[in-house]
Amino acid sequence: MQLHRWQGLARSAIVRRARSPEDLLDQTSFLLHRSPAKMPEAHRNILRKLQDANEVLKGKRAMVVDDDMRNIFALSSLLEDKGMVVVSHDNGRDAVNALRLENNVDVILMDIMMPEMDGIDTIKEIRKIPAYKHVPIIAVTAKAMKGDREKCMEAGAWDYLSKPVDAELMVGVLRAWLG
Image 1 (cartoon, helix red, strand yellow):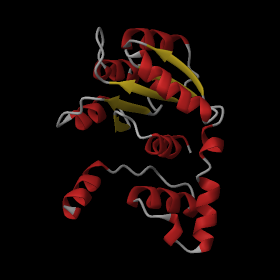
Image 2: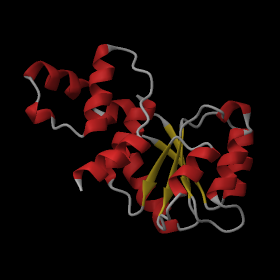
Image 3: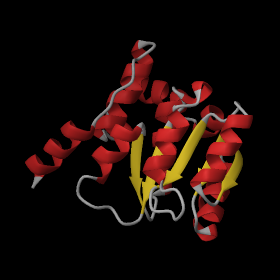
């Protein structure tokens, strides 16, 4: 079972470029889920500074796209509690149209299963907008099917979360992409 877990991590791991040795330590411990309590004190202090999610996320603009208002409320509340500014749309077409008019969104959380324009098509359309070619898009879905993660990544998502979203995991993912 442990081998299966590691193989899954190896297939899905994405490590962005580290800007410093401290950043590499943060990314490595995040990827390996290493407990800071088992690290030397100096490493814990470095991580403590790097992992202050409120500072990393404070003031960043997030767009939440989901056809279920309960999900928009839950995700928006969590993000706002971390100091983020949140805009939301209940369908992909409105989200794409809004992004064509504004270029100040730092991260997008995209539901995959939506009517009118699903998340995969929405991600593809967003990636056609020059200002959003390199903005993190996190795919979020409740009905995870085999191959969904790969489809999302091929469409242009940078990461993938399953609903119900684990708040700590989501904050960690956001910290990794926005830090």
